[in-house]
Amino acid sequence: MAAAVELTAYVVAGVSRRFTVEGGAPIAALDDVSFSVARGEFVSLVGPSGCGKSTLLRLLGGLDTPDQGHISYGGHRVEGPYAGVGMVFQQPTLLPWRSVVENVLLPIELMGESRSLYLDRAHALLDTVGLAGFTDRRPDELSGGMQQRVGICRAFIHDPGVLLMDEPFAALDLLTRDEMTLELARICQARPVTVVFVTHSIAEAVMLSDRVAVMSARPGRIREVIEVALPRPRGPDAEANPVYHDTVRRIKSLIYDSGAMRRNTS
Image (cartoon, rainbow, N blue to C red; front, top):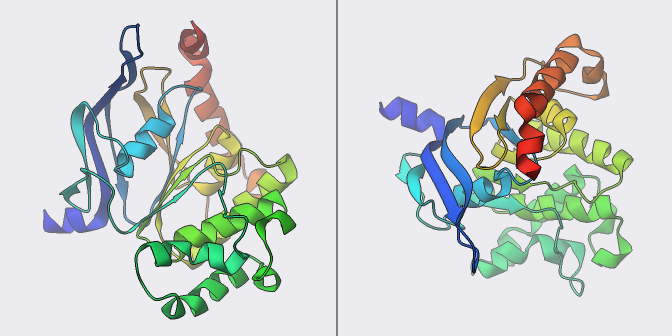
């Protein structure tokens, strides 16, 4: 049993979450959600808009608590924010008055640790994502994709065991988004970490993930968890693999069948 816990990052058991709207009935965001994530695994959450993907990610990060059920990380129940997790959101939220390297080092300062002990790591991370020549630039001197790379480096600076990512590329143009998808795949290959990734892009989920958890329309439930049987490392040529197209079609059918999208907007 101890070995199973050691190999498991997250266990989500019967989790439900409801929100109360002033003057209205409670809204069920999640209902009886159960799944697990292995250590070192990349799992994406996909589903219709409003199905509770971001709510589930916040629960995993300890930023919110379920009404029913529980979540454990490494065998310990998640009851609030905890060490060892990095979070990346849709907007990188960089501090405009700080340089690129100073933004990367921000979590170290907030944790009260010495910047000097992490400076080499910050430069190595920025070099990994192709920003070695931009360490002293300000965020407004960078493109959107470059800013998001800084945000990813910031999440990696304290060597987290888990990376929780909430649609980190949604605000980028299509070409930059494709570039960032491949960049993230390369980073995670070089620096193994457990990743839970929220996205509306099925293609993005298939390209990046070991498994994809497909959620139903609100209240969100796990309809099916699909294994992505594509070999790694993955590059642009992965899209030519029949397995890629078969997996994309299977996920689409789960999301769009049984009137799921109509139920979500009714």
